Image (cartoon, rainbow, N blue to C red; front, side):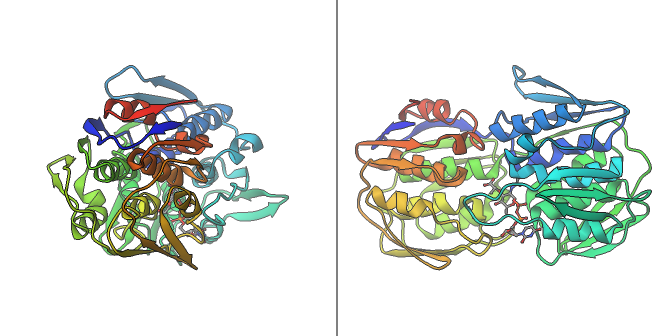
Length: 419
Ligand code: EPZ
């Protein structure tokens, strides 16, 4: 993407359905047999389309109605489905690990190529496998493929998660839905995507009780029925546009936002002196004469500051005053974007898991490369605020998580062009 920077963004942009909610609620359809799952507000993204390909390959009929105001997806599940996930498709996306729980619970077996890592560090699934073993699954990993099977049904029980892993929580909640008896998960992830998954499971007849203490209680059922739910708005995409408005000193309104889903970001933005107004489901940013004040951030599991908004915040702070720090505590290595921002004149030094950001007055446009989807978003934002022309290469990463970002930015007055 080629960007001519220096133009304050103006106008209104609507948030897409959340990528990370859609990726976990779509495989819920695999719990059905001879039933239909309808999901509203599913975004049009690479990773979503990969998940559709995987589900179709397993035998699910997927109908997409994108011309509706509320894009809708209908999953018609036959009485029999396959349980072997294709290697090429599974390697295309990390989210393929979310097939483990539903396929094991409904077919009693699955063979799944281990999901690839990515540039933000190793992406093991040991917590997923440990929990499924505790529910009675026999798991064998051979030549990079997970072979899991269970004699009869998975058995519900109490499981403590060593880390509030989002994916492990999601897989175990889906597995527990068809298990024998009750499952209680402790120390689970509390991301809003987990609430969305609970709503979808309830819509197909699974009793799910989330407890505020970071636990969830699920009664396994013998059979689930057709259901329908809406995918929540994408809180990370929303933050990306809010920060783009702040960085370009523009005046934009981001619609279809759930403010409490982005509390951590809004609190840090307020602390840094950004000008914005929060309404029921919109956030509006305003120009400000002053550059952002220096702040310190540590990424944490929800409701802490989200790791997925860390690169974007670093880009915004690179134009701030003084020295800010961001400590990344969730992933091993999520700072690859820093060297790319430095090519644009930013002054970011990485000391192990802390980024030390010395604010500069201006960024200059430069040719840069996206290393993962959030890094790509951060570089695009920097390009919008920089003087001159920026080209962001390897946009494929960005298309995994940002629907029509070129069109959305153009509608906000940005000068961007896809090459
Ligand atoms: C989900 O990944 C999101 N992806 C990620 O978003 C997000 O960054 C992450 O949650 C944290 O919020 C999807 O929902 C598809 P984790 P997930 O399991 O489930 C370690 C984006 O930008 N871990 O909470 O993989 C893991 O290595 C993507 O949209 C284990 O060690 O996150 C990581 O360091 C990037 N063993 C940490 O826990 C396990 O079995 C958090 O992982 C599982 C995880």
